[in-house]
Image 1 (cartoon, rainbow, N blue to C red):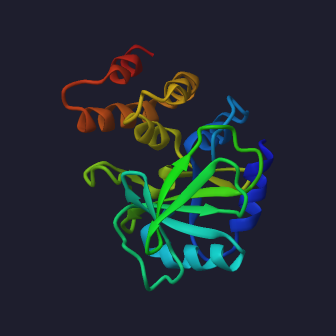
Image 2: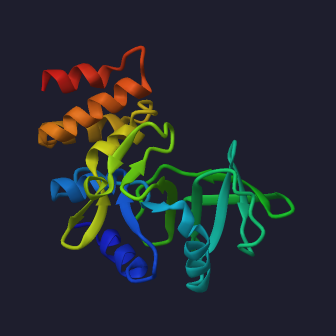
Length: 219
């Protein structure tokens, strides 16, 4: 297991908010092996815990930004002063080599994140999702839902987002080669229920068709 998963889990556990690894690290946790180098750590959490997460990370010495869109981020110095526009929170340690932020004005920064392998626990991106009493709600389409007990799985008590959800999020950006790699690595290992859910979710998200749908049906 990648040492960053263990280090990050040790940092976040027992802090009073729910979280699960997502992105490529979630695929590795599902498959039980490291499948490729990873650019960064992505953590799925829930919107209602936003302020708790920010306050905790700041208490541990992390610099916290919220995404504004268009490559702009807002430096959060007070949880009462947030823009609340996007679902992404970027937490950075001083000296992180691949995160660059240049001040524009009034705590607004132009942000650039290099796509290189992360080797130290100096960057965590939180993706804040929504849920109801029993379902995880896909942020891009509230009609796409997965039961919470199926949405969040465990590998040795480390929580991670179910692979079908991870792949659904990755489906929006096939320009990134690693997203296709993750689909290729994971598809043969998905359960029949997971394949069916992913196929239906993709059909809802891409009503004009999508190449992964055919691959799922063929597998």
